[in-house]
Length: 216
Image (cartoon, rainbow, N blue to C red; front, side, top):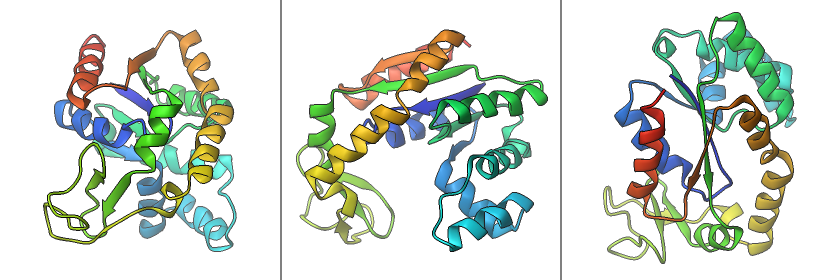
């Protein structure tokens, strides 16, 4: 089962990814983790990616696709994968289709978590994260028992700089809408888009996702 998880910043992709990988025997592959591992392992594409990253430049699509190809060829992806944060553009999606086609595989489902922009803004400007264990809280919706302290490891809770300013958050949502949301149409035309209402309790959201994936 080859699944892509998409949705705007603050839609709850991280939470749903944890639920999905627990319920299904497929690895959760985030873009950031994929690059870090490729660089650490010194893979051919990891070395190329590092050159751009060290120079403070964006990693070009052809290198990104190469890193994805290396990752999907690993043994733990034999039964499928959950891609999170990739693809972000239609050209990347087309390149991914080519990579999977060469492997005799295809994208089975694209889960699109949909949340109104006003709700996303409220969610993102209240998020805090534990510096130690990375647990995410929300000052309004899911606050820690003790202000500024993680419930799990007593680590310090901090707010991401890009979650701090409303203008910054609004820009992140605008960029997503302009660059990534068009992917929904791309995958809808392929017949594999699963649109999910993300403005609900996380378990309700996952119930819909799980029901859709079980039909694959």
